[in-house]
Image (cartoon, rainbow, N blue to C red; front, top):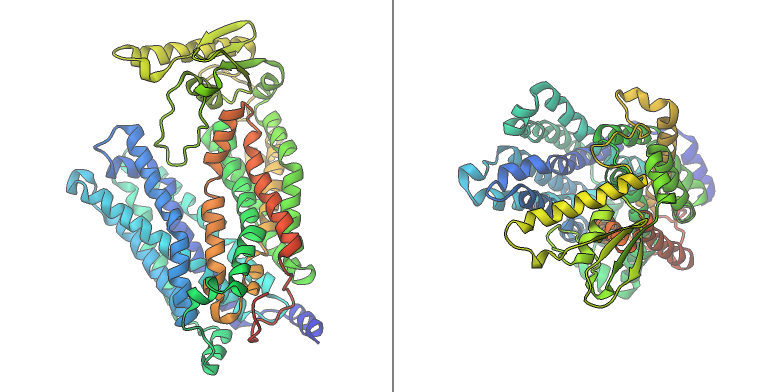
Length: 572
């Protein structure tokens, strides 16, 4: 009977009411991601406005820390608004989240800078960023639960997959608005005050979202539960204080969202970081390549969401993790070969060794940008890592200064703490020049030196020919893996928890997985590269996390695609 109902639901077209539900939820969530990504895209300019009393490097660190604050508080937003959503209702809770998000974003555009109101400016900025993070922590769960509880049996994967496109669409929308305003005003005016315009116009997006959501009714599952008097009076303690439910939150985190998060971040954010920071591709070219991969691959969210209604959520998510494990190394090496052939050849042929006392070397994990690594070994490793140089480590006598051996040339490094006066600038500059000179002679591409083989695009459509198109295909493959793990995840999380604690139960593991496991990926991967001297070694971070999810998900996560989420049955 259930199979017959599901097949009937899949074969009929969407009703107007179902289209309105998806539009209301997706549009609002796109606008929330737009608001959230604006700050990240403009972090350098915002740093100059609100942290102007510090040197440029320090102000950029503080600006990024303020951005990170929004990610760190997302799980707390999931708890706060998840609880409200399970007690008060889905509609009014995620109406509240978009009001907080939109208002906070608008106020960032109005906020006076440091030169006007002093320390009150950065304090207010950080407070607004935390409000945005709290709101986003509640928005995703509310939108997903609302859509899932409106979806007919047998189509939850397809309906909720529309929500999964919103992070990508929000990012693209924010970049488009910034590029349009920037190109119209010019760099000088944009840096002075024009950066505020993308924040200010978010008030119109907020008005549209609120209007659409006010027209919507409460979800039928929540209304049914309220009428029966079975809604939870204490969703937090019920979801996480009772093992029968808490175990599913733990399984959702380790067996679904942790692997999903690292595959998502690798396919979109780390791929962009790899192109720019590792392969030295210019920002315009890298963004065009990523944009094309998103354009070509984003439809996969819908495809795999719909497919999960037929063959199951778990099998698609875990297959995406498995493919990532097997293919990340060859795919990223192919990206290097096509994007920067000179670098690829040098990595294969040039012998570089760091000879250092192991006790002198640190693990350069620096997610906030505030840690200082000063030893001779750390300075040598950091320089080679920034240059995307593959190297080997060789132990040296205790207490000796680290040396970089490039072929037959050896260059001694320095300890920052032992420098004073003019040497603070002169020694690092001389060391950098000597190392870069030796690397350049050995065959590595160097800054300021022509590299005719590196991919460089002048126009948006140039990406559709030559080796650039091969790169687009490779990056699109990474995006397809993203859509495999992310397209069905919303439905999978919704189905793990009963209606009475669904909003609370699914939101926390989602935001810990994506905000913390995924958010730590760039810093962790770079530290692994610097530690080992292998520019691909950072891929072990997503591979190991995806492997953990593959094992735990296969053994312990139930498949619930045919579950009736309107019943009073327990989780799982």
